[in-house]
Image 1 (tube, rainbow, N blue to C red):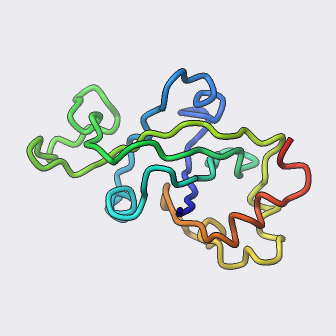
Image 2 (image 1 turned 90 degrees about the vertical axis):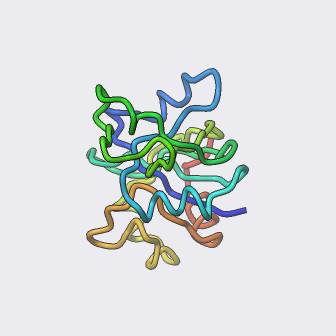
Length: 155
């Protein structure tokens, strides 16, 4: 099993939106080749991911999701009405992929970015690097354990 951190702006799609889903939700709209490669080559069904609320104050980890199924072509790349439309993506060899996710747990509180910066053992966590812009990134097993052990995070 591998671990991930997946970012979403809560005004676009929040953990509460995921919690309201009756079936696995499509995680779409990723338009970065490194992220696409993670989703295609490294991410597997059954992997777990932190749900991270970004571009909000405070930003941070708000829960856990499970990756469900295999990667598939992101349908938004073909939809001219979508903000994620890519007119140059060929239907016979799509550029962009989506993954389905399901909620495992919504945390009792947010693990803020500021808090994570102060936690011993998380110094190398990718999300804490200045200028880190990837919306999907790997998390080590040790980082996973440290975050999940934070006081008051889990109900």
